[in-house]
Amino acid sequence: MNIKLIAIGKTDNKALQSLIDDYTKRLSFYIKFDLEIIPDIKNVKNLSESQQKEKEGELILSKLTPTDQLILLDENGKNFSSVGFSEELQKKMNSGVKTLVFVIGGPYGFSDTVYAKAQGKISLSLMTFSHQMVRLFFIEQLYRGFTILKNEPYHHQ
Image (cartoon, rainbow, N blue to C red):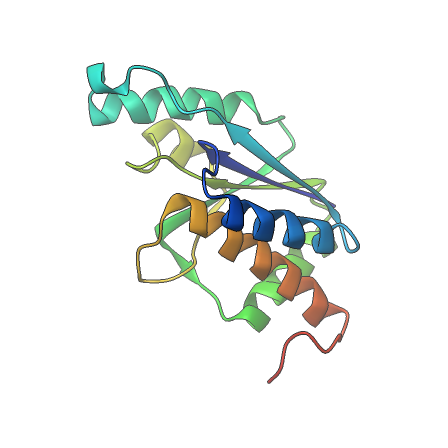
């Protein structure tokens, strides 16, 4: 299985980007992983919230193939423990999913079109984090999930 994370806008913070790169590298020992950044939309001041979500949604959907399974990182999604998330990853691998695509939306969330295409939603926390920090947290949780599946000592219970 391949895993892709799609996010809107680049990470400006060099320290944060360094940590994202570190966990991306660590993750590559377990699975093929890609982080794809969709550039920020230009002239957003001239767009309404819904117009911005629609434009971002079109860009997100253009990155998918028909066989991709789309999971949104959404505040109203399902909550998992780290072990529960690793079990969910195992289920996806067992079910024959070729590419699992997770998406971090823009500042206003997702368009209705993206919600309609998604096969699931995951919430990382009830708290709100910056979109840049969510990338790090999510990639670290992917890495943690695979170390749990391999019974490696990274995760302590």
